[in-house]
Length: 278
Image 1: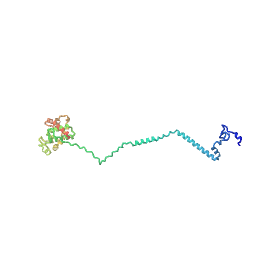
Image 2: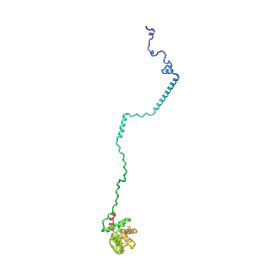
Image 3: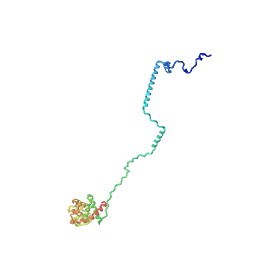
């Protein structure tokens, strides 16, 4: 049989169903608010000190972490990592650029071995050619004219001097190296004829007795030419004189006008010799 008083105590709407008594929660002792606080109250004093110290350390570490997070927020954000597809495209581009053909580096030319180098051919000086006789001369006369021109070039005389000398020799000896029939000594040297004008010898019929030189020297066409051209160079204004006047200033002939008739032939001969490279 049930107790009538129990039956009379019924649950009405609004009554709490989770409380064991009627005491409000805010009136409960503070030490009973959490199981952790309650457990700490049960620890001895030294243990509670260590727990408090550990809690303080954890609190300091928390503050440090918060401060570090604040500093990290102000630092620049790290560069975004490229997507895998972008990395693949970049790798293909790099491979393509490395695969391009490159121009080979210039290979230095090795120094030539002096023992194997072929020397350049030496330039040979063109040998003078004996010109064919011109102006009615024979070979002997042409050779004597060549000696006059060659000697004048060695003396650095101008072309006009060659023409005067050849024309003078044409008048004096007909361009032959003539010995003297009067001066037998002259016949001991190579000669191309005999003349009878006192002791005059050679191409220019120079006289040893007049101080032109020794007989043997005057019989040498080159020496005789040097003597004539040296005397011509001492005549003032000879370059502007008529040919016959310049020749007469050197020769002092009894027939001064006779040299003029040989000028055109002498000019032709000198030109032919110079063109041949004599």
